[in-house]
Length: 74
Image (cartoon, rainbow, N blue to C red; front, top):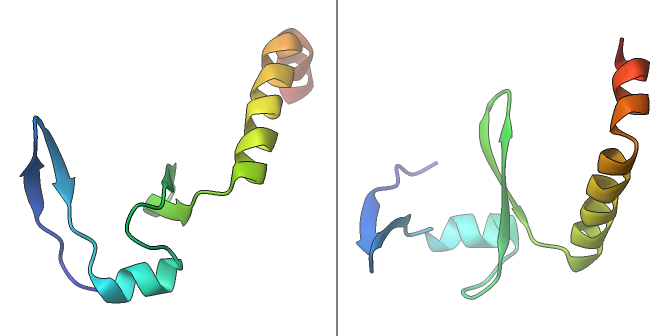
């Protein structure tokens, strides 16, 4: 895997993803990615509107039932 360099993008910072990484992720210029943290580091995955809707719904459910979930976790 190549080493990426952080560069300035407007008032922000960004990285340029090499073509071989875009191919492996199955994404193109302009596509969106999920960024999440895992025990092994940062994980990039292609954005999927269906998964995004499911995650949004899960957030609502977890907020609505926060106390029940807390009790189940102990």
